[in-house]
Image (cartoon, rainbow, N blue to C red):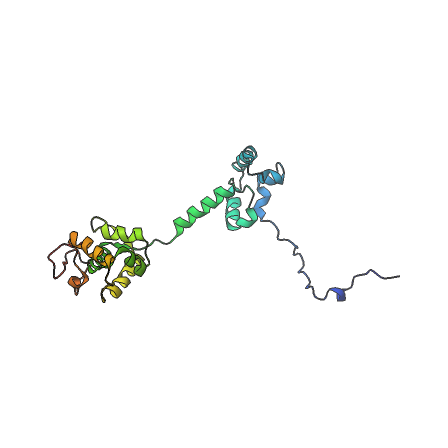
Length: 223
C-alpha cells in the first residue's frame, strides 16, 4: 500500500508562511463599514458599461456610504484593481478624469519669461535671411510657436523659459554664420525689411532683453 502522507521533505523549496499570515492580503479595516459589503451583491458594483441604470443605482448607494472617501482614495492608488468597478461613487472614466485633474493641480509650475528677447532674436535671424523652416529646425520648436513669437504684437507676453533657451541656442549658432543663398533667404530678408527688423549684426553687444535697448546700426524699435 502506497502512503499518501505528505512530508516536509517533499516541499523543501517552499518557505514556511509566518504564523497568522494569509495567502491573500486582508482587506483594509474600513471596508467593513462599506455599504457595498452589506447590501446587494458584488456584481452590482461591476455593472456592464452600457447599463446606465445599474451604474446610477450603485452610485446612489455610494453617496450614502460612510467610507466613500477611503474607497475612492484606494481606487485612485490602485487603478488596476479598481478597473471595471464603481468605487467611491465614480466609474472608471470619472476616476481617470479626476486623477488627471489632480496631477495638473499638483504639477510644478513652469517658469515664464518675457517674450521680448526671443522675439528680437527670431526677427534678427529673419533679417539675416533665415526662413521659418530653418528657425523651426534649429530651435526644435513648432512652426506655430516660431511664427507666434516672430509676428506677435507687443513685448509683454510671456513664454516658457525652456522656449527662450532653445531660441538662444539657435541664435548663437545661426548669427555667427551666413545663411545659404536661395529663394528662401531672399524671402526672409524681404519679409524682415518690410517690417523694419534689424539683422543680428546690429544687435552685437546689445542687451536684447532690455526693453529700452535699440539695435546699433538701425535706429529702429525692433521689439
